[in-house]
Length: 581
Image (tube, rainbow, N blue to C red; front, side, top):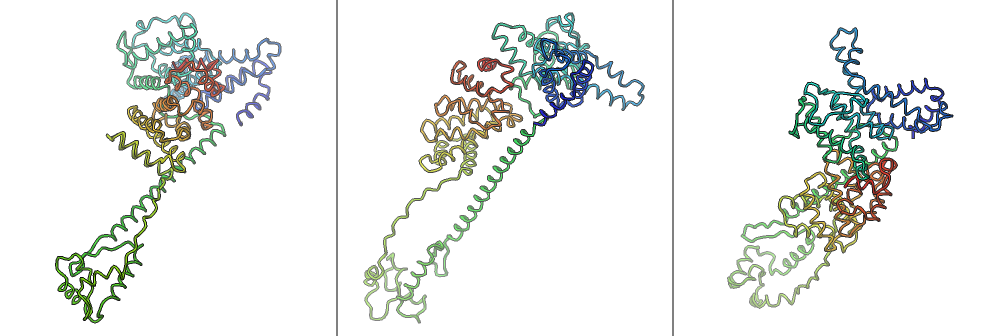
């Protein structure tokens, strides 16, 4: 990638020739990370690469990269312990304009917030230990930023400082830091707790107790007084924690060219699906207009004599014309008007006869019309029409997906389960060609619909899908194919619907429990999901819902889905699964 090339060129400039150059390089990297917080993850990756690169000044050192890590931690500690009020006073020294002072103060605060985010990214790269992070977090909540043992011997949560001592800027830094590292920190502390090291999880719980008091969630003990802005910020942090550390809005970060290509391809696929749906909708509307036109032409009309005339469809126009010719040729006199002929027939035929309107004018000397009527079938016998073969109309996959959503929406209002199952069965038509594609589109549309809805709606949908599986009305290939798009777009959906991950994990667990699919179908899921969608964590959630944390086959799937980043945090797949239980 371009990052690899540029970072290699940067290292090749000789930054490790002596300690002074290395010192200046670290100061520059930290300053850039503070100025550009959106790229803090990239600068943390650069620091990780530098720590793993042998430097010239460490040729005789037993451990490579130790000097770089020491200077980096010293710089980060210095920035962390520096009071922002002193930095603001220094930055605004000699400035009389109030607007200029506010501008300078804003830059200092922005740098400090960016530094917190950079520290979090360094922790995620394993350049800062969990022990140091658990020193930083209580210090931010207490307003005392120091790494010394005396300052970190904090009092119990009930003996916190007075409300006036709460530094709201430092509390805001705490929220920014936990937004970055909260998920990794809790998983690592839980993994350490499982092996008998409980101190990290206990310290973390103490921090959360203070946060809950500040946010107004917990009322026990002394409650520090904070502004509504900070209170709402802490409430959002607690909500994000309760929903699996999924942010409401995806934050902008540095992207590789490959990631940009993936996003463009995903947007093009989404646009193609929307275009296809619109075309199907227009096609349905057009066919509806044709049906309405046909039905309007079929309406009966009455002539001036009171006889009802029914207009036949255009397909029968030829037979109608021949029938009219036959009747015209059988008339006795062309000079006789139709009205006079009709009157003459009505005089000869009893009024109670049902064939009276169908009789034609007899010629002079012919027998009675009734006898003539008996010979009519001999002259013009009717051929028995053979029934047309029944043609089954198959719904296209796209139309099947749209109709599936309509059926579910109607069912959620209060529909009948049996009717919904029957409607889905008629859409899929499992005994006809193309049933796998239709079933896959039905599953895809149904799952995408309910991922952004309540759990009650998810359960109702699963009731229908379970019935289809039990009655063998849907193939297993349809289930696995239909889950591809929901898995690929899960990270984007979760931005606006934080519970989408739990909903989809529950759906997959039900499919696995029914025996229709196995968990290893995730190994053939879309590339974007397996590389950037936290596939191993998703599989762990499914295992938790299945209550199969020790299943060897499932653990093997999680092991194969783990990325290099997952392996840095968790030594084995079992450790990763244990962090979710």
